[in-house]
Image (cartoon, rainbow, N blue to C red; front, side, top):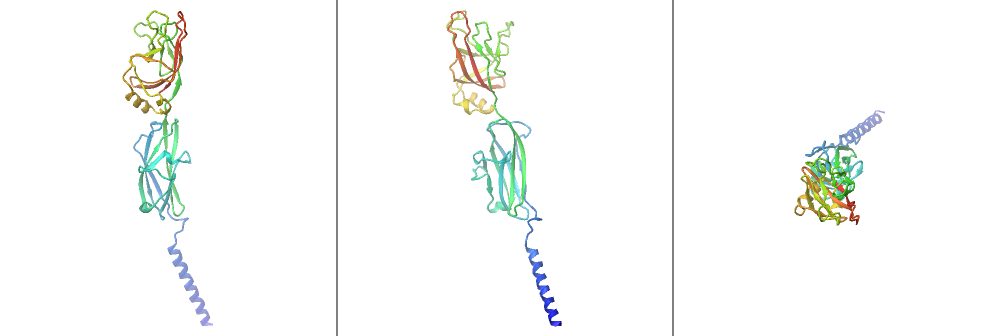
Length: 289
């Protein structure tokens, strides 16, 4: 009996030792410490960012008990398309990026994201995961401001009875008014009348800069690709020499500066009334600002 008792005690001792060794070497994925993601940026997150512009985030990943496995970039809860961002200047193959090499121990990388082309507030998330299937998310909201496009009212022949100027901020037609020192007071451009002042025909079909505006011709293709105010400024700076007058043709595009305001305008309508008496000729525009 003593030998049997001693045998079972020995077996219990061995089993207990094996259990203790096993528990001491395996990590418990439930209680292990997960990774930590942090984000910094140099832009003012309280201010509007230009649509289509690059916005940069520096993201740091710190491992917990397990090595880092992946980081995923999201915009409003959806994985961000790889054509919209780079990591340290390189385009990733997926929005869920596998972490390799020394970076599995920790990293700091610059994510440059192309902002959307539509105004709104967008939430960006960086989801860091490790080999224990634990994750940590850092997020930031970014306000994006795109240019607004408005359609103007009709700007009539200034020698006729109707409004011959145009306010590019509002798109409203502007009448001459009774103040001889402030004619077409809020207008940024004005119709240029007829070939001979006082004559009712033919209409020139032109507009001129007004109240300190500067007008430059730009490429027709720029209209569709312009989504931000910075692009309008760049178009103006790269435009042709300042125009004293602009002959209007449907589809023509011009950049206009007045003080600190910049506009991109496209000719929408050009209508010659064909009359020798009415002066009801008019033009209208689409305006980006």
